[in-house]
Length: 113
Ligand code: 5GP
Ligand code: ZN
Image (cartoon, rainbow, N blue to C red; front, side, top):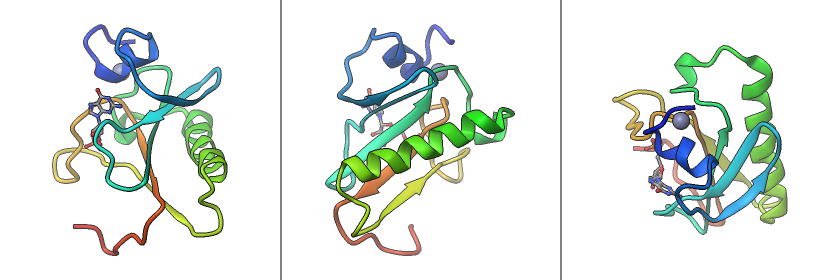
């Protein structure tokens, strides 16, 4: 846990968020600035700064599988969806707590910008 990390603060309930799913290891909540009809962020409860810092394969798997479960509960399975992890400056990572973006509900362009 990090005192100042925005997403750690959401995990602790210090900052409100629209939670869509929680378990012992992960928390998922709606992005404050959604880029698609469904835009959910899935994060580990423990502070991991980025995918590059991640060492726990099981935890990374749990985060990914949580995203897939949310895609199903959001009704995205048939139409499809995208999962994105931005890592570092060139990818535009702005919050330094590992998070998977789950995007869906509209046609998504490829490649991303
Ligand atoms: P990144 O650019 O690091 O991959 O994604 C960070 C995401 O966090 C952005 O999509 C941004 O809109 C979202 N975000 C930033 N601050 C907050 C917040 O306080 N609450 C929520 N729910 N999302 C946030
Ligand atoms: Zn954190």
